[in-house]
Image (cartoon, rainbow, N blue to C red; front, side):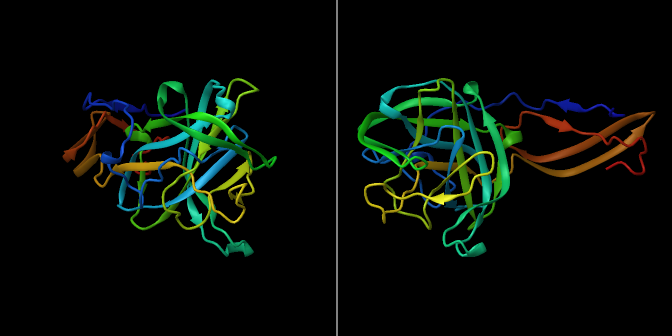
Length: 274
């Protein structure tokens, strides 16, 4: 049992309002990988997981993640959650494998329906592709959607300029006969192919166009954020006064700060607490 309580101090009631992304909103990746209205949707229905890489264009924090997808046969199902994770890059040639792939885990979170927004985005003649079974259908469906996730402050992710990262996406669907796919991109190809695998321990395989087996596939998504920290501290001190732990701090700036989580040590000794 913890010997000290955790304190939460609310400093601001400012929050985030979900909204769709468009090209005027900026981005934190090398460039947005925009959806191909006549491309493929690759099966990313759990336990299948897809991943694609990007280069960070600005040191700072990821605030929001946006991606595009569709439903096989245009038969819409119910997404019960999206599992997203971000990984470091394993470069091509590592371990004798000639393509890059996701490496060490940086961040992961499961998002439920109240935590993401879905909007109808457009239509086009699109194909369906399942790399596991090698099933492909063209044409298959017409509608596609944008999925928008805005991260609360405690889930924001620091990124470093010029580093390469991977975004993994998998959708859990309530109906057993409905399948969701991550849409391919029409933007300029970046580095190696997107990859696919299966939970719980994916062995990553590169994605190619099933009708043009030498043509690489990239997936449609954009990472956005800001170079500033949500809070800049200029002073932080603590005292133990009359058996009460007392903290003092000064901030130089705050951006959309909802509050503070203050955690105390489980050690019942002020000298060893950290």
